[in-house]
Image 1 (cartoon, rainbow, N blue to C red):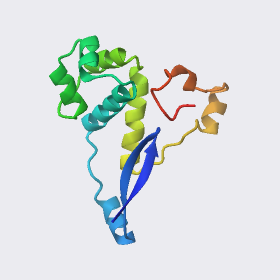
Image 2: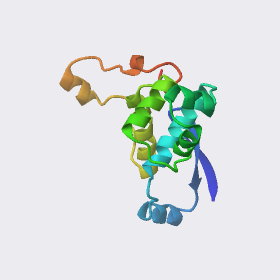
Image 3: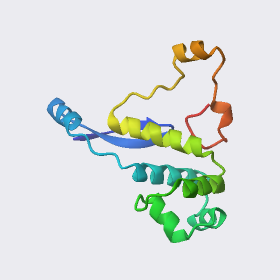
Length: 144
């Protein structure tokens, strides 16, 4: 087995690459994606990119340091209210965080994630759909 880097929104993950038979069996036996793990990874990545500590974010979000740590490690399933509070403390829109989680889940499932808005979608709604201006700088490293 060889590890190959895969980049999702600027975050590099390592994917096992091996023989064709192993790749086929991996497709048949996909690992179950645990949403709380992906959410925790995204929250940790955002916090670390900002150079902030768990203590700072937990204080701003008004959540215990231990609980925030468990959420980041994927050990606790955070409520929507808690996720909103953490995202507010990180100054990141909840929708942006969830979009990054969605992209990571899609990659884990082997689904292609388009990096642009499909042409038929933009034609249907008849306007420029450049959404990258809505993201705070640094949230999604792949934006712009």
